[in-house]
Image (cartoon, rainbow, N blue to C red; front, top):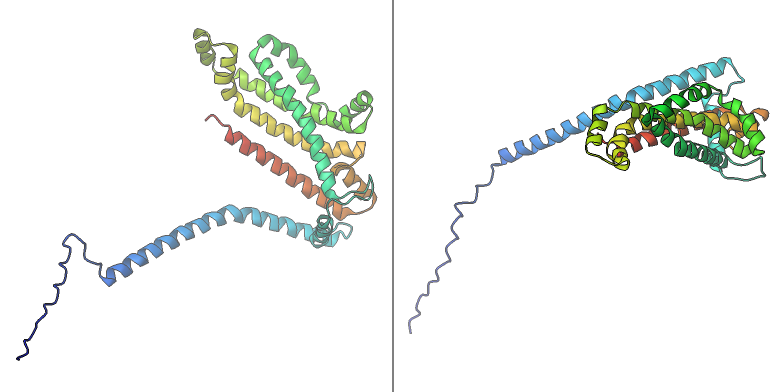
Length: 301
């Protein structure tokens, strides 16, 4: 029996898809990768340059300030230098909330008590000053009647109000809050009233033609137009309130940054006084920036 040769045909290779693009040549892929890498490096370099332009001036300014401070402390040994103050910072903030009695508490408690007084006094000033500014600006007769009072009382030194507060409230803490209130209310009244007075008369004429109720006039016309002026007054007021609290607490005593500064002076710890100066400045800056962000958040532009 003869063996029959069997042949098995190999399956044909699938036809190439004529619609599928041919793979790029290795040289083209390398060029594309280099282009993407170059674009990424260019974006990173541009971002770094922008950050450098933004941060370099304040860094140089702070460095110059610290350098001048160090030179002055060399010639005046009674003034602590940056290194001494930095060591005091580490000591103070290692335990900022200790309590060793009513007159010996950590700097954290002093900051919180000062912020509480400022918050109460400033909040009361906003609740009264902003509506008063709207009324004074909206009604000419009321504005003419209160203008002499505002002009007379606004220039009065904040600490001149402290004896009145002590006389009326018979306690140091409400007297300090009273000083903050009466000092910070005027910028809010004045700026809000000016904003109302500068609303174009055409807007109010249209509201009158449409017979809009006073509530609609306020929400649709007055408030959006006056908001930038009002927030300017609020920013000025928080600066005044935070400025006044230190001086008021120096005179009234108790727990707070002002009293803490005075107590450290009596203990001849000048480095702690310098720390308090920086703390007051930093907190004031943060409060103002928070109000700036709030103003941008509620901007009608």
